[in-house]
Image (tube, rainbow, N blue to C red; front, top):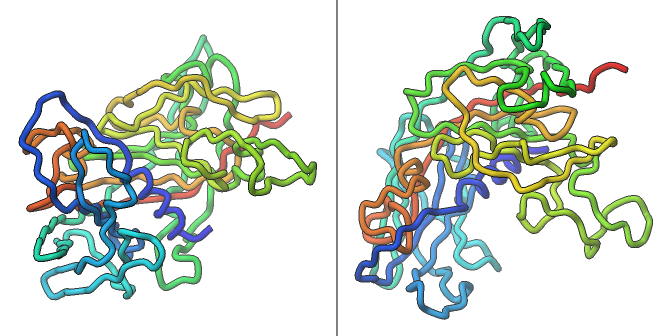
Length: 357
Protein backbone atom coordinates (compact mmCIF):
# COMPACT_ATOMS: atom_id res chain seq x y z
CA UNK A 1 0.00 0.00 0.00
CA UNK A 2 1.32 3.47 -0.82
CA UNK A 3 2.30 5.59 2.12
CA UNK A 4 0.23 8.44 0.68
CA UNK A 5 -2.88 6.34 1.15
CA UNK A 6 -1.95 5.63 4.75
CA UNK A 7 -1.49 9.29 5.55
CA UNK A 8 -4.72 10.22 3.81
CA UNK A 9 -6.37 7.78 6.19
CA UNK A 10 -4.63 9.55 9.07
CA UNK A 11 -6.18 12.80 7.83
CA UNK A 12 -9.66 11.31 8.22
CA UNK A 13 -8.81 10.85 11.89
CA UNK A 14 -7.39 14.36 12.21
CA UNK A 15 -10.43 16.12 10.79
CA UNK A 16 -13.18 14.45 12.81
CA UNK A 17 -14.66 15.30 16.16
CA UNK A 18 -15.04 18.45 18.23
CA UNK A 19 -15.98 19.63 21.69
CA UNK A 20 -18.62 22.25 22.40
CA UNK A 21 -20.02 24.07 25.41
CA UNK A 22 -23.42 25.50 26.20
CA UNK A 23 -22.66 29.22 26.20
CA UNK A 24 -23.77 31.51 23.39
CA UNK A 25 -22.09 34.26 21.41
CA UNK A 26 -22.93 36.64 18.57
CA UNK A 27 -22.57 34.42 15.53
CA UNK A 28 -20.96 35.77 12.35
CA UNK A 29 -20.83 33.95 9.05
CA UNK A 30 -17.21 33.43 8.03
CA UNK A 31 -15.00 31.29 5.86
CA UNK A 32 -13.98 27.97 7.42
CA UNK A 33 -10.65 26.34 6.49
CA UNK A 34 -9.13 22.97 7.39
CA UNK A 35 -5.60 22.04 6.37
CA UNK A 36 -2.92 19.75 7.75
CA UNK A 37 0.81 19.63 6.96
CA UNK A 38 2.91 16.53 7.56
CA UNK A 39 6.66 16.70 8.03
CA UNK A 40 8.89 15.52 5.19
CA UNK A 41 5.97 15.12 2.80
CA UNK A 42 4.14 17.16 0.17
CA UNK A 43 0.69 18.48 1.00
CA UNK A 44 -0.93 15.15 0.16
CA UNK A 45 -4.15 16.04 1.98
CA UNK A 46 -6.73 18.30 0.40
CA UNK A 47 -7.42 21.71 1.91
CA UNK A 48 -11.10 22.17 2.80
CA UNK A 49 -12.83 25.56 2.35
CA UNK A 50 -16.47 26.31 3.16
CA UNK A 51 -18.83 28.95 4.48
CA UNK A 52 -20.03 28.61 8.03
CA UNK A 53 -23.68 28.30 9.03
CA UNK A 54 -25.51 29.06 12.23
CA UNK A 55 -26.38 25.98 14.23
CA UNK A 56 -30.11 26.74 13.96
CA UNK A 57 -30.03 27.07 10.16
CA UNK A 58 -31.50 24.38 7.93
CA UNK A 59 -28.76 24.73 5.34
CA UNK A 60 -27.72 21.78 3.14
CA UNK A 61 -24.07 21.09 3.84
CA UNK A 62 -23.23 20.78 0.15
CA UNK A 63 -24.32 24.38 -0.43
CA UNK A 64 -21.64 25.67 1.97
CA UNK A 65 -18.58 24.41 0.09
CA UNK A 66 -16.52 27.14 -1.61
CA UNK A 67 -14.91 26.05 -4.88
CA UNK A 68 -13.82 29.37 -6.38
CA UNK A 69 -11.52 30.69 -3.66
CA UNK A 70 -7.88 31.66 -4.07
CA UNK A 71 -5.93 29.31 -1.81
CA UNK A 72 -2.19 29.69 -1.26
CA UNK A 73 0.54 28.11 0.85
CA UNK A 74 3.07 30.65 2.10
CA UNK A 75 6.50 30.17 3.69
CA UNK A 76 9.66 32.19 4.18
CA UNK A 77 10.64 31.78 0.53
CA UNK A 78 7.58 29.92 -0.67
CA UNK A 79 4.31 30.82 -2.37
CA UNK A 80 2.23 28.07 -3.96
CA UNK A 81 -1.21 28.45 -5.51
CA UNK A 82 -3.53 25.50 -4.91
CA UNK A 83 -6.07 24.26 -7.46
CA UNK A 84 -9.71 23.31 -6.89
CA UNK A 85 -10.39 19.58 -7.25
CA UNK A 86 -12.72 19.06 -10.24
CA UNK A 87 -16.06 17.56 -9.26
CA UNK A 88 -15.39 17.72 -5.50
CA UNK A 89 -16.67 21.02 -4.07
CA UNK A 90 -14.59 22.84 -1.50
CA UNK A 91 -11.40 20.79 -1.93
CA UNK A 92 -8.04 22.19 -3.04
CA UNK A 93 -4.78 20.41 -3.86
CA UNK A 94 -1.17 21.41 -4.36
CA UNK A 95 0.14 20.91 -7.87
CA UNK A 96 3.81 20.52 -6.89
CA UNK A 97 5.79 17.95 -4.90
CA UNK A 98 7.27 20.52 -2.52
CA UNK A 99 8.34 18.84 0.73
CA UNK A 100 7.37 20.51 4.01
CA UNK A 101 10.05 20.46 6.70
CA UNK A 102 9.99 20.01 10.48
CA UNK A 103 10.63 23.26 12.32
CA UNK A 104 9.47 25.43 9.41
CA UNK A 105 6.42 27.73 9.59
CA UNK A 106 3.73 27.72 6.89
CA UNK A 107 0.54 29.68 6.31
CA UNK A 108 -2.64 28.79 4.43
CA UNK A 109 -4.16 31.96 2.95
CA UNK A 110 -7.70 31.94 1.53
CA UNK A 111 -9.43 34.78 -0.32
CA UNK A 112 -13.02 34.69 -1.56
CA UNK A 113 -15.28 37.56 -2.66
CA UNK A 114 -13.05 40.13 -1.00
CA UNK A 115 -12.84 38.22 2.29
CA UNK A 116 -9.45 36.92 3.43
CA UNK A 117 -8.60 34.46 6.20
CA UNK A 118 -5.38 32.66 7.10
CA UNK A 119 -3.96 30.10 9.49
CA UNK A 120 -0.33 29.45 10.43
CA UNK A 121 1.43 26.39 11.82
CA UNK A 122 4.98 25.41 12.69
CA UNK A 123 5.63 21.74 11.95
CA UNK A 124 6.87 19.92 15.08
CA UNK A 125 10.23 18.23 15.19
CA UNK A 126 10.16 14.48 14.55
CA UNK A 127 9.07 12.53 17.60
CA UNK A 128 11.95 10.55 19.07
CA UNK A 129 11.11 7.00 20.16
CA UNK A 130 13.09 3.95 21.20
CA UNK A 131 12.41 0.33 22.01
CA UNK A 132 13.25 -0.37 25.64
CA UNK A 133 15.82 -3.06 26.54
CA UNK A 134 14.59 -6.62 27.16
CA UNK A 135 12.78 -7.02 30.47
CA UNK A 136 10.67 -9.50 32.43
CA UNK A 137 6.90 -9.42 33.04
CA UNK A 138 5.65 -11.16 36.18
CA UNK A 139 2.14 -12.63 36.29
CA UNK A 140 0.65 -15.15 38.71
CA UNK A 141 3.96 -16.58 39.74
CA UNK A 142 5.29 -16.85 36.19
CA UNK A 143 8.01 -14.90 34.38
CA UNK A 144 7.60 -13.88 30.74
CA UNK A 145 10.34 -12.28 28.66
CA UNK A 146 9.52 -8.91 27.07
CA UNK A 147 11.72 -8.42 23.99
CA UNK A 148 13.28 -5.32 22.51
CA UNK A 149 12.39 -4.90 18.83
CA UNK A 150 13.92 -3.14 15.84
CA UNK A 151 12.13 0.16 15.14
CA UNK A 152 14.61 1.37 12.50
CA UNK A 153 13.05 -0.39 9.54
CA UNK A 154 10.76 2.17 7.86
CA UNK A 155 11.32 5.66 6.43
CA UNK A 156 9.20 7.97 4.31
CA UNK A 157 10.88 8.59 0.97
CA UNK A 158 8.72 10.38 -1.58
CA UNK A 159 11.32 9.73 -4.29
CA UNK A 160 10.79 5.97 -4.09
CA UNK A 161 8.04 4.26 -6.12
CA UNK A 162 5.89 3.53 -3.05
CA UNK A 163 6.65 6.68 -1.04
CA UNK A 164 8.60 4.74 1.60
CA UNK A 165 11.54 2.37 2.06
CA UNK A 166 12.03 -0.64 4.30
CA UNK A 167 15.44 -0.08 5.87
CA UNK A 168 15.93 -2.97 8.27
CA UNK A 169 14.66 -6.31 9.57
CA UNK A 170 11.05 -6.62 10.76
CA UNK A 171 10.77 -8.35 14.12
CA UNK A 172 8.03 -10.83 15.02
CA UNK A 173 6.29 -10.84 18.40
CA UNK A 174 3.81 -13.43 19.68
CA UNK A 175 0.31 -12.36 20.75
CA UNK A 176 -0.86 -15.04 23.18
CA UNK A 177 -4.31 -15.43 24.71
CA UNK A 178 -5.15 -15.90 28.38
CA UNK A 179 -5.37 -14.09 31.69
CA UNK A 180 -1.81 -12.82 31.75
CA UNK A 181 -1.89 -11.65 28.12
CA UNK A 182 -5.33 -10.26 27.23
CA UNK A 183 -6.99 -9.63 30.58
CA UNK A 184 -6.67 -5.85 30.92
CA UNK A 185 -4.71 -2.75 29.93
CA UNK A 186 -2.01 -3.93 32.36
CA UNK A 187 -1.53 -7.30 30.65
CA UNK A 188 1.71 -8.61 29.18
CA UNK A 189 3.46 -6.10 26.88
CA UNK A 190 4.52 -7.53 23.53
CA UNK A 191 7.28 -4.89 23.65
CA UNK A 192 7.71 -1.38 25.09
CA UNK A 193 8.27 1.99 23.42
CA UNK A 194 9.73 4.95 25.27
CA UNK A 195 9.63 8.67 24.44
CA UNK A 196 9.65 11.97 26.28
CA UNK A 197 5.98 12.95 26.40
CA UNK A 198 6.89 16.37 27.84
CA UNK A 199 8.46 17.39 24.51
CA UNK A 200 5.18 17.27 22.58
CA UNK A 201 1.69 18.76 22.87
CA UNK A 202 -0.19 15.82 21.41
CA UNK A 203 1.04 12.26 21.07
CA UNK A 204 -0.99 9.73 19.14
CA UNK A 205 -0.18 6.07 18.50
CA UNK A 206 -1.88 4.52 15.48
CA UNK A 207 -1.61 0.93 14.30
CA UNK A 208 -2.34 -0.05 10.70
CA UNK A 209 -3.14 -3.73 10.20
CA UNK A 210 -1.71 -4.09 6.70
CA UNK A 211 -2.92 -7.65 6.16
CA UNK A 212 -6.35 -7.21 7.68
CA UNK A 213 -8.23 -7.61 4.40
CA UNK A 214 -6.97 -11.18 4.03
CA UNK A 215 -8.04 -11.87 7.61
CA UNK A 216 -11.77 -11.20 7.26
CA UNK A 217 -11.76 -7.46 7.92
CA UNK A 218 -15.29 -6.11 8.30
CA UNK A 219 -17.23 -9.29 7.47
CA UNK A 220 -19.78 -8.98 4.66
CA UNK A 221 -22.93 -10.64 3.38
CA UNK A 222 -21.76 -12.64 0.33
CA UNK A 223 -25.03 -12.44 -1.61
CA UNK A 224 -23.68 -13.95 -4.83
CA UNK A 225 -21.49 -16.53 -3.01
CA UNK A 226 -18.37 -15.62 -4.99
CA UNK A 227 -16.14 -15.43 -1.92
CA UNK A 228 -15.32 -11.72 -2.26
CA UNK A 229 -17.03 -8.47 -1.34
CA UNK A 230 -18.86 -6.68 -4.16
CA UNK A 231 -20.34 -3.20 -4.21
CA UNK A 232 -23.85 -3.29 -2.79
CA UNK A 233 -23.23 -6.17 -0.39
CA UNK A 234 -23.73 -5.19 3.25
CA UNK A 235 -20.79 -5.36 5.66
CA UNK A 236 -19.85 -4.61 9.28
CA UNK A 237 -18.61 -1.01 9.23
CA UNK A 238 -16.71 -1.16 12.51
CA UNK A 239 -14.98 2.20 12.17
CA UNK A 240 -18.11 3.95 10.83
CA UNK A 241 -16.38 5.47 7.80
CA UNK A 242 -18.85 4.22 5.19
CA UNK A 243 -16.38 2.04 3.26
CA UNK A 244 -15.13 -1.52 3.63
CA UNK A 245 -11.49 -1.06 4.58
CA UNK A 246 -8.46 -2.95 3.38
CA UNK A 247 -6.40 -1.51 6.25
CA UNK A 248 -7.66 -1.60 9.82
CA UNK A 249 -6.78 1.51 11.83
CA UNK A 250 -6.65 1.44 15.60
CA UNK A 251 -5.99 4.75 17.35
CA UNK A 252 -5.32 3.70 20.92
CA UNK A 253 -3.34 6.54 22.49
CA UNK A 254 -4.11 10.24 22.22
CA UNK A 255 -3.16 12.85 24.78
CA UNK A 256 -6.04 15.11 23.71
CA UNK A 257 -8.33 12.49 25.25
CA UNK A 258 -10.80 12.52 22.35
CA UNK A 259 -9.83 9.45 20.38
CA UNK A 260 -8.40 6.98 22.85
CA UNK A 261 -10.18 3.64 22.80
CA UNK A 262 -9.84 0.77 25.17
CA UNK A 263 -9.82 -2.46 23.24
CA UNK A 264 -11.53 -4.20 26.14
CA UNK A 265 -14.65 -3.69 24.04
CA UNK A 266 -13.26 -5.83 21.21
CA UNK A 267 -13.48 -9.60 21.03
CA UNK A 268 -12.40 -12.33 18.61
CA UNK A 269 -14.20 -15.48 17.63
CA UNK A 270 -12.49 -18.83 17.10
CA UNK A 271 -11.42 -17.78 13.61
CA UNK A 272 -9.82 -14.55 14.87
CA UNK A 273 -12.58 -12.44 13.33
CA UNK A 274 -13.10 -9.46 15.66
CA UNK A 275 -16.38 -7.98 16.73
CA UNK A 276 -17.03 -4.96 18.90
CA UNK A 277 -19.14 -4.32 21.98
CA UNK A 278 -19.50 -0.71 23.13
CA UNK A 279 -15.90 0.55 23.38
CA UNK A 280 -15.34 3.37 25.86
CA UNK A 281 -12.68 6.09 26.20
CA UNK A 282 -9.36 5.12 27.71
CA UNK A 283 -6.15 7.05 28.33
CA UNK A 284 -2.79 5.35 28.55
CA UNK A 285 -0.37 6.31 31.31
CA UNK A 286 3.04 7.88 30.91
CA UNK A 287 5.85 6.48 28.77
CA UNK A 288 7.30 3.96 28.37
CA UNK A 289 4.17 2.58 26.74
CA UNK A 290 3.39 -1.11 27.10
CA UNK A 291 2.54 -2.19 23.55
CA UNK A 292 0.10 -4.90 24.54
CA UNK A 293 -2.82 -6.71 22.91
CA UNK A 294 -4.80 -3.43 23.12
CA UNK A 295 -3.03 -2.10 20.04
CA UNK A 296 -3.88 -5.02 17.76
CA UNK A 297 -7.08 -6.42 16.29
CA UNK A 298 -5.34 -8.73 13.82
CA UNK A 299 -2.35 -10.94 13.40
CA UNK A 300 0.03 -10.11 10.57
CA UNK A 301 2.13 -7.15 9.47
CA UNK A 302 1.49 -3.78 11.16
CA UNK A 303 2.70 -0.27 10.53
CA UNK A 304 3.00 1.49 13.88
CA UNK A 305 2.96 5.30 13.73
CA UNK A 306 3.83 7.62 16.61
CA UNK A 307 2.60 11.10 15.79
CA UNK A 308 3.32 14.47 17.43
CA UNK A 309 1.18 17.49 16.54
CA UNK A 310 1.39 21.24 16.98
CA UNK A 311 -0.22 23.39 19.68
CA UNK A 312 -3.16 24.39 17.44
CA UNK A 313 -4.19 20.77 16.96
CA UNK A 314 -4.02 20.13 20.70
CA UNK A 315 -6.12 23.23 21.47
CA UNK A 316 -8.71 22.40 18.80
CA UNK A 317 -9.37 18.86 19.90
CA UNK A 318 -9.19 19.75 23.57
CA UNK A 319 -11.87 22.34 22.91
CA UNK A 320 -9.99 25.14 24.70
CA UNK A 321 -11.85 28.28 23.58
CA UNK A 322 -10.17 31.45 22.38
CA UNK A 323 -13.71 32.61 21.77
CA UNK A 324 -16.92 30.90 22.80
CA UNK A 325 -16.88 27.40 21.30
CA UNK A 326 -20.61 26.77 21.01
CA UNK A 327 -20.24 26.11 17.27
CA UNK A 328 -16.55 25.30 16.93
CA UNK A 329 -13.61 24.47 19.19
CA UNK A 330 -10.60 26.76 19.43
CA UNK A 331 -9.57 27.98 15.96
CA UNK A 332 -6.24 29.36 14.75
CA UNK A 333 -7.74 30.68 11.49
CA UNK A 334 -7.49 34.47 11.65
CA UNK A 335 -10.74 36.04 10.50
CA UNK A 336 -12.52 32.70 10.14
CA UNK A 337 -13.15 29.27 11.59
CA UNK A 338 -11.39 25.93 11.28
CA UNK A 339 -7.91 24.59 11.84
CA UNK A 340 -4.53 24.82 10.12
CA UNK A 341 -2.33 22.28 11.87
CA UNK A 342 0.70 20.08 11.37
CA UNK A 343 2.37 16.93 12.62
CA UNK A 344 5.50 14.88 12.42
CA UNK A 345 5.66 11.15 12.88
CA UNK A 346 7.91 8.17 13.30
CA UNK A 347 6.85 4.76 12.01
CA UNK A 348 8.11 1.20 12.12
CA UNK A 349 6.96 -2.25 11.02
CA UNK A 350 6.30 -5.20 13.32
CA UNK A 351 4.77 -8.63 12.67
CA UNK A 352 2.17 -9.93 15.13
CA UNK A 353 2.16 -13.73 15.10
CA UNK A 354 -0.06 -16.45 16.52
CA UNK A 355 1.41 -18.75 19.16
CA UNK A 356 2.76 -21.97 17.71
CA UNK A 357 0.40 -24.90 18.13
